[in-house]
Amino acid sequence: MKILLLEDEVMLNESICEFLEAQGHQVESFVDGLDALEAIKNNMYDLLILDITVPGMDGLSFLEKIHELKIHSPAIYISALVDIEDISRAYDLGCYDYLKKPFHLKELALRIDRVKISNDTPRVHLRLSKNYSYDQEHSTLLFNNEPQTLTKRQSQIIDLLARNRGLVVDFEQFTNYIWTDTFVDNATIRAEVNRLKKSLKEDVIQNIRGMGYMIEKP
Image: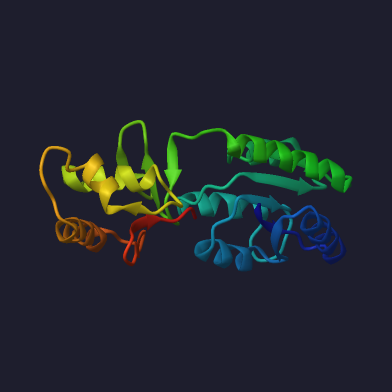
């Protein structure tokens, strides 16, 4: 998993990083909440591990702010605070778990495994990019969770590519799935995909030269 760690106790920060990287995770660590905020604006993380009392921006305000930005990643709080108001606010903000300091690193690993199992559960929404997702149940493209208006043909193209994230969709698949009742050449398919690409706010659809198109798994 790609993990953002916000912890201002340097020795604990280093210990967590070393332990989690040995477990096979990719960790980007910060001691200041504002630095972490800038990082999450430009990167996607599978999990956030957040202390509460950190410089710049505290961990609770950090989670509140990223939700305002429509960034949603599961969060585990690690804190010595035992005030029920702080703990309640953390859960109100949607944190996944709360681990009181001091804790054993293996306990943190167990909490992370629980998040991973939850993340591996099939989801109705497929993440396509930093801001785009696809609602499979309603066949709707979302940008920052807001439905986007597409033509019927564009919706079919997105549906096919979204359901095959990480795989190249070739021209024959486009023909068989979308143009089932009419003859279509590759140039027409390219033109339709290019019109769709120009209408999107992010570069979601990749052109795989000589093969077809693909939406990568973010």
